[in-house]
Image 1: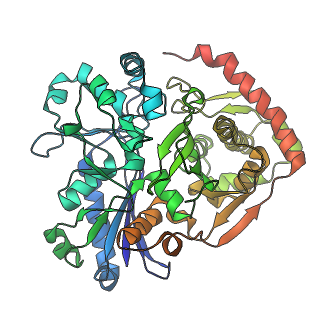
Image 2: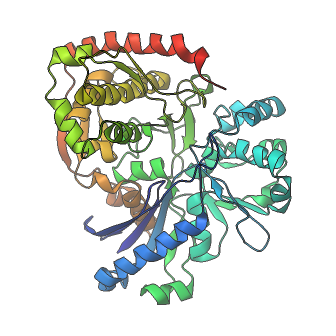
Image 3: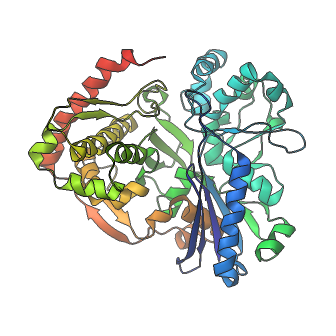
Length: 488
């Protein structure tokens, strides 16, 4: 039995996976984000641990026998967050999250201070990454920066609480900008540009390697065996890829979670920072991935659902599904940049916008505009990845938005690649974390990481692809027309 832990932005999820690939149990605890100032996004690590203890108590109440059989634990989590700890292991301030946009000026500072940044990290400096956050802290909270003995990513802080070890792994570390991504080691040059040293970084392991063992007192409290291994784990997207079997070149997925992601596995480091595309290590040895990221995806659907007063996202999508092709064609265009944007614009100041509203538009029209706008944002990311025709046979759809067949078909039509959903795909990073635990316990890749059974396939319709291409051209023209109007 293997325990997977996924520390998301809005939920902490635990799953139990057996060796027959059955999800024995799944529990989740909600999390909230604090925004103390414009562009700021933070969470208290103490809230993560409270959620962890509540979730484990629930799991123990219903699955005590299964917990007693756990052989290893895996970790997945939101990337890029900065947890700053002093020499005694105390957290110095709330964690600054992946969707925090305050460090735009520090990105320019880092690019100037480290001219080789792109070659080493394979990515542009963006406010979402960890390194600019530390430059912001150095400038605005110098007393906190001076006390910082260790910088951990969110899931790695959970590891510290579980094991007492300060350890990270390659896929998450690649999202800090401090990693030499090709060499899979910390870069002294980039760290020095941020006023940091390797001594302040965690020890690195591969995601499928053991990183430590569960503290004896926690094993006793939760009814787990003594000496349970804790695997390196992975950043949320790399772990999700392991969960759906995207572990070989050309395999990938589209994630419609809070953010939107297109993820493609590669056997080599393939950076293209000019396109604001990410090139990171995978959670498996000798493997990398390319990734386009937009900051508001299913989050946009949740927002418009509240805006129009619909009972739920599903209820709004039912209204959207009843729109005629003509009504969809006349719907407003929507720029989906509710939290700024990464790929391809690298613009933390970008904002959302409806364009073309008339008296005829209703809740359904706005709902369509939002899922279409998010789809167009993902299509921009697809182009940034530079995928060649025939290179990708299909993409697996994961995340909360994967529950919508309407949205799945829209993505297939826009991108021109079949979309598939898979049984168990909703487990996401938590399933991948459990699989990484299994690998750390001696499992083989073929044994542990098959692609789950396909639940549904959505083939692109060439006529719809052509129609959407015309709408997409207007969408891109709209961004260019208003980009200079966003407040800085």
